[in-house]
Length: 226
Length: 226
Image 1 (cartoon, each protein chain N blue to C red):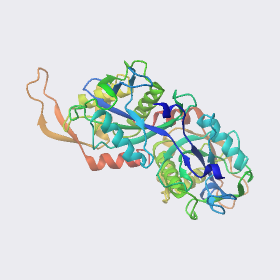
Image 2 (image 1 turned 90 degrees about the horizontal axis):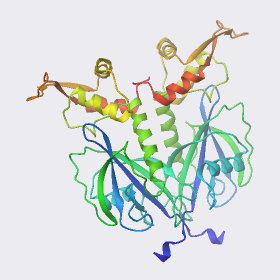
Image 3 (image 1 turned 90 degrees about the vertical axis):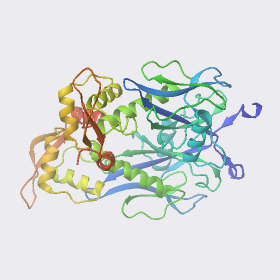
Image 4 (image 1 turned 30 degrees about the vertical axis):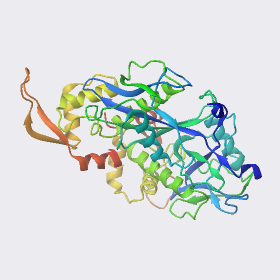
């Protein structure tokens, strides 16, 4: 037992930040300026300090590499393959968040040399097991879009049903029937139709909607079945 | 960088195993025969070996403490509060599974001195942060019952709608209206009504159902919204 007295986990946290540019789902990735995987594109992530709880560590790491703060991240999954890190056994806890791409202005810092939004259907070969982490994150995003309302964090405050449909299409990777989508989504009762319509558009001006945040949160928590 | 060459995570895995006894949701807990938390009731869990991937480790640990094998566990959540373990910084990855309580016969071994099914609404004070782990697992179970079909692993091969309703009631912790439940659940199209009915019952014999496993799996994957 003596040897066990000062047990210590060296582990990391990786932060998957998704955004939507109106057409595609994007993810915020850095170019690493340090070994291991120097020059590789990677999910922003780093080692957790000895005295840090997970959520504060996730926020510190995201801020130090990207400048982003005040972003609520949820835990995604923990990745722990024995050979995932060249420097030893380091498991990593992945977190994720959805953000409005127009509201945040990420800046590379610390060992991040560059930072960019990458379309999730055009990802390069990433550092570590980060392709697997993103695959899991995208799977979670799809699953959420099937189970719960989605879009509050990703869309502007007011949006058209076409914008919302394009978001679902981008997440699910399929084309949705316009009329069917409109019928189903308006029935779900978390959208508020606004009096305002688009202006200066070539086509027929579409109505703007916003989310009923209370109903949205309720559906998100309770799901849609019972 | 030299100091980083042999990084090492000491971390544990805890296995939350849920069962249903026809009335209540139960969870499989051990009594620890070793420090730390000797004599405390705990979720079966242990340290992961240096060269073990997560899923094999989860299976080895569950088997060594409870004798259960061939159980598919899913990752639940990782718990990493700085002070969660008295011997140092040890994060733990929690896994969970739902099992048929009649099919498995757990036996305490290794440092597990006793093993029992505990009702989730009558839990004692547990070792480490295991009350928090179970709270999260129960939350996940409720969430799943709202989002997806549930019961395949928890119920016998054939069951009545009353049994299925009692399962939902036990998970959700609420009473469900019988007629409403019957209407909603049969509409969801993952149940197969059998020709067989109950025998030797005092009340009107109820029909047995089984799960349409294909449809069940499909709904589980896709959810119920779009």
